[in-house]
Image 1 (tube, helix red, strand yellow):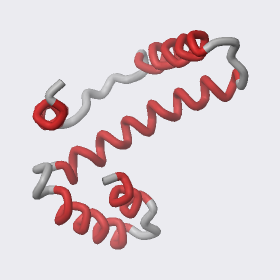
Image 2 (cartoon, rainbow, N blue to C red):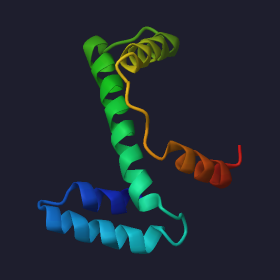
Image 3 (tube, rainbow, N blue to C red):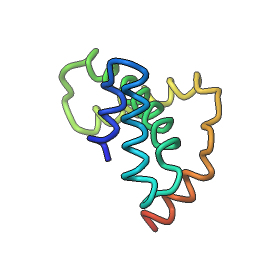
Length: 104
């Protein structure tokens, strides 16, 4: 799925991206209904969070323990979450689908 999403994000024009989205929908919507819209929005949110984590780690390059690294990541996410004000669109639908897919 990730490889198919990359075709959308790496498109050089809007028309090319729309064709890639259509291709993505044909492949994945049959197995995961409505994922072609929700997954793209969710991926953007995940990429934003990954950016926050990368910045926090890059500042400190070396960590004495794994626990210290986890604490830095946790604190960076906590700080960034204060700025998250917009609710995630269609989160309930995505959450329901994730619950079906991943049971646990």
